[in-house]
Image (cartoon, rainbow, N blue to C red):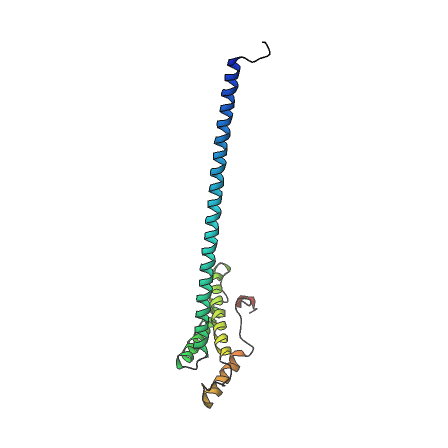
Length: 175
């Protein structure tokens, strides 16, 4: 009978096996909770990505509509468009004068001039965009005198000699 384990040994083995089984079940439950959390996180990320995509599409659509409306306004030969162009040209000229007056500015203060330079270049881009959109007089929006003036304005604005400040600061020139 020495080969057969005693009842105490069976009980001890049974208790150990139950502990191991309980530990395995707890580990299984923990893994299931982690998998559920991971799946929830992935679902939330997918939902957030979808929401972000929808917001981006809506933003692009809004910007496209604003751009189209702006292009329609620019193409129209209205007095408002011409006033807007005149104001933009004045703004650019004023910025040019201010930038040129800042040509001797000290290095730590150049950020002031650089901000004005960026603004002046943006204004010039808007001016050129406005004039480029006018196209020809095929739609008959201009009478003969106005059309000649428009062509002259466009010719002057599209010609060389307009300074792009950002790549060509005034302090780079020799005095």
